[in-house]
Structures are given as structure tokens and as C-alpha cells.
Image (tube, rainbow over all chains, first blue to last red; front, side, top):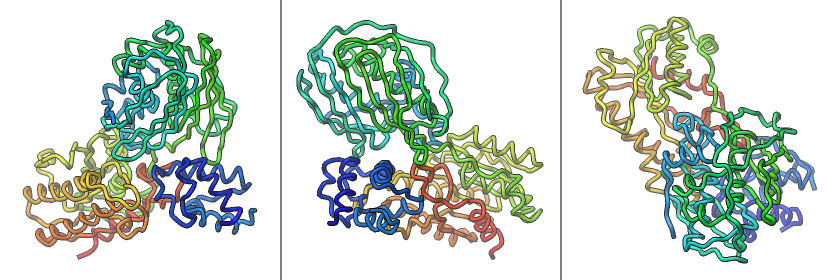
Length: 79
Length: 464
């Protein structure tokens, strides 16, 4: 787990709840209890605020796991 | 677990006493065109019910804090389940309310000893439901009076009405009125609040102010104040009902007279793909009969648009899940059947399969189609050209096995009936298309439906 993934995990936990703290990095968020599409929007807002990035609608569809988010964010050149 | 469902009439009563008359909660025909797809319970009513469960021993308490996250809407008539908890002064209760085994909202409430229940005005003049975009919320602020009808609330949640101070309940009610009617108003999606109560002071009006407006994603946070009561409310501006292409725009896509002589029966023609199909057929010279279930106003709008362009169209009511001989068609016999009838589309949890959800979807995609095609055959044995609107979801890896299975089963039934009746069948698996059912706050890409629908229409009307 990289530092970026740690930051992403914390934001996921803030948005979804404490039960997300141990969610595997490569497991889809849809497997989280209570995951709904609104969680993704709130997560995107939190990520954009925290990491200073701006996701396109197409990238939104790729934000399916902690690992995937880290990959997308890294490709955007964010740290 | 304690169970409860609030009916449509309960929601009307709550709308009157709270002042939140947003059509999502009180108008089934309008609600069907929202993201929720059906009449939806006020989130605050659900929270009040959870608090009611906690006060069901008849305690009289007050709140120092109540916070909630609304995760998924609860529909009118949908049964909620809440753990049986007991509120006591000084304690914090945390509840997660479920419906159909899915979390709907969480409530965290911190309790304190009772203070004066108080009396407030029991009503105020109704306010208009504002239709605002996210950009229009920037800097928006206002006031709403603090009022509370204890008797009216007691008919819905008696323990809360008797056990909490009027000012605190009125503040809760004001929050749903602000979100549902003022900011964001008509297209609001209330997703959570955090209310705090210090002391017993309150004012005759609640002041509110849009604090943080995220214009990219449509989210707003609203600050609420009333004496010692403060709160932060969070809501999204959800997409409005999708406006499909006009007949004039669609006419440019077809050749004049391309479908002259076609008599096309569009099942589910009041909006979305059915609406577009009806207009394309009319623009191409065909006769159209569209069906509606709840969307009579929408269907008549489609008919009027076609008629004003010189086309031939009428609308009949049809509930595909109820037996119907299609007597409303009279002597009119179609040459072509376009089947777009659909319930509210819902996707189940990943890694699970919900038989009740599958059955609800299959009632339209399988049973309903079979009933309509069979009823048409009983009226005339002449084979038809049939378009059965299927979906790419059948081969998708996304959650939603119930929807995919129902569409796949519909394809099988459509094919079997086509062989039995001699029909020419086209069952395209449509991609994600821009309709009310695909609109969401995520702004996921969705293709324009007109070219896709036109290709499908041409395939079914020209194939041998």
C-alpha cells in the first residue's frame, strides 16, 4: 500500500464508514456494504479537494477501487 | 427489529405539516421522472421514525445532536427495518435503517434530559418549490418560519411528537422544507444533515445560507441557524427529467414517407425511447398509438406534438402487468409493435441476486411483453414486426444480475412468440442511452438515443 493509497483509503473510510478501513485495495467498492452511487460522487469531491485533481466523467467510471483510483490519479500527474 | 412503511397518504400528511411539498414526495407521476423513479419518502420522516423507535418507551427527552446520512431513497410503501434501541439522557444512539436488506440511512442521536416541550405556531403560508440550477445556489440565503403541528406529527410518529421539544422538531422539519422547496428546491437530493442543539433558545424564524457550492458535481451545503439550534445540511442538485429530441429535430433524420402505411403500437411511449420512437414513426409518415401507465400528461404531450406537425397519433392507458384485451385499440390493428414498457430500473447488490427484484423487472420485460403480444394475436393473427428493446447489460460485468436476467428472459420469450406467430423480430441490445432512467448525479456518459432508436426502427421495419 503506497502513501497515495493510504490517503485514498482514509477518504473512502470518511465517505463510506469505518467498515471500509480494511477493504482490500483491489476489491471493487461495489462489494462494500451500503455502497451506492452517491458514495462515488462524494468520494470524487473528497479526492479532488484533497489531491487537487479534477476527474472527467469518463474517469469517474474508472474509480472502482483504491488501486484503480491511485492508478488514475498517478496518470494525471498528481501526488 | 421494528418495521414500518409510510404510504403515499402518509407522505402527503407529512408534506402538509413540514411544508416540504416537493413533487418527488407527493406526485407519483412527477416522481417517476426523477432518479428515484417512484414517489419517495421524505428522509427526515424516516429519521423521525427512527427517533420514534428510540422513544417508544414513552420517554421525554431532548436532543443535543442528531446527524444522518441518507444512503438510498426509501419509496412510498417500502418497509423499513430499524433496530429496537432505547434512548436515555446522556447516551448516544446509532442506528442503521434498512429496507429490502440494503442500508437506507444512518442516524446518530445524542440525548439529554427533557426541557420544556414548548408551543409554536402550527402552520405557515406554503412556499413555492423553486426550480434552481447549482449555479443559482451560489450565495443563496433566506429565512423560513419555525412552526410545528404536534397533533399532525403525532399521527405519524407519536412518541417523537410527545417526547421531544417543539422547537427541535420544528427545526428538523424546517431542514427538509429548506432543502426540498428553497435550496436546492425542485431538483434536490437531500443526502445528510448534522444538527446541534445548545440550550433551549430558539427564534421565530430559521435562517439558512448556501455555504459551500460545488458547481462541478452539483453538491451544496446549507447552514441553518435558529437561536441555539444550528445545522449543516448537504444536498445535491439532481438532473431534471430528460427532454428528448423534438419531432422537428427527428424529422431531419428520416426520409419523408419512409414509414408510410406503418401502423405502429408503441408500448411505453410517454417518454424516453418510446417517445422518440413515436415521433420518428410519425415524422416518417406512420400512424402511432402510444401507451402510458402513469404518464398520461406526458403521453398526451407526445400526441399533441405529433398532431401539431400533421401526424396521426393517439394515446391509450395500459398497465402491462394487468390483464388487458387491448379493447381500447378498437378496430385499429398495428403492423408493428415496439415494446419499451419498463418499471423503475434498479440494480441489486454486487455478488448477490434478489429474486423479488428479478420478479418485479420480469413482470414488465417478460410477462408484460408476452401478455401484450398474445393479446394482439387474439385480436388478429396477422404476423407483426416486433421491436423488443433489450440491453447490453446482459453481457455487462457491472452489478445488476436481476436486470440482465429479466432482459435476457424477455429476449427468449420474444423469440419464441415470434416463431409461434410468424413475427419479424428485432431485439437489439441497446447501450446506455440518455433517458430519465439513466440520469444520475454522477453524469455518467450516455449516448443520444435518437440515432440508436432510428437504426433499430429501420432494422425491424425493413427486414424480411
